[in-house]
Image: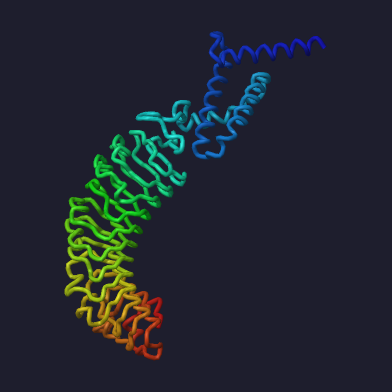
Length: 410
């Protein structure tokens, strides 16, 4: 009995000594206690890291700490058993340590309503938090995620100190053009991606950085783009303007020498924009009110491969001869228009969409001017359904011209 009592008293004493060691009130920590102390702080840091990725666990932090204390007590009481913190050595082996798991506060603290993971300290995640105003952004940030909120204004001061930003995601908010400061983006000289789609903009925000490579302004209420709005954006490669209220583009696209993808579908355009960049690769003009295309429309675009003009008002009269008979084009969509004939196309075209027009004849000459062993169409997809022809109207020798087609729908 006495032996058991002495043993129990010894264990209590050991725990008391370790707690003093943990609290740094004693200078006589044993080597084993020093090791356990390091593990203790690693666990606390680890719990912080986990809660960065799983915010719901914050409410259980008290429970987690209680369980950690229990494990610590067991490890002190039973030093001969296997170390319950042995798994932490794996984290240390992967390069993690107590310091790397702590939050970076350089340039300011992370706002309570956002997440700034210690493993990626230059990114701030505030998406889908129900925010109505801009949070304070630490100056170290390069990647800012604020999408899917209800933010209504972006004052000049909001990003004034975060001059290293590379990505800013503000799509799906309630921003209006008059609530965006004239200098809100002016200092972001290294900004590459700016997402402002699905807001309430009526114009392009002023003084956008000329460093932009990817600008998304689609699904707003933009009705006009001034020539100055995009001037000097030599690096811009992607521009999304679909789903707005544009009636014309003027010369706003002039000078966008690096632009490869332009989407202005779903607007109110009545003609093809002037001054389209020569290096355009993908051009999307569907769902407008375009009734004609200019002479030599595609001749100057040597890199254009995809053009979509479905859901417009194109007629045979509005398409000059051989407009689409250009080498290099891969996909052509002229569906849901008012065409009565199949326009001549290049033999290198691979996908043709002409469904839902008023086409009355299957003219094989539109696909192949000459048919032999080496001359035939490269078409793989042909959509002619929803017109005024049937399979009986398809010439028998079309199998030679369209020998590579996987899908022909009439």
